Length: 147
Image (cartoon, rainbow, N blue to C red; front, side, top):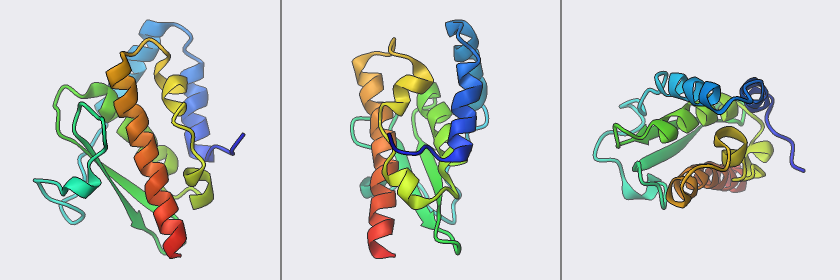
């Protein structure tokens, strides 16, 4: 199994301490409150289509900005104000993957969505959230290829 970046593993470990579904939902809602849209120096609305996450009902967008140390800083836009799951995942991915070794981000499994949200999500929501993970991994792959 691919190594999960340390900061992301810490977040997953914290969520794993909440086996009760309602506690976990509350924690994820709380995380979504920390969501901040992509800074204007990175992108402004309307966001370019090439940054849009395919299959995401919440109209999520993702950017990867190279850092001096060879890692990436991830930024997200979530255009649906009711996109709480997408916003909480954006916070988790931004905090858990920004600054992580690119090879760890490249190998991230979209099953991460199940580790975070469980398997009770609708197919559409699961596909959109998995699309966010896949988009982050693809941007890391692209950055790795241009390094």
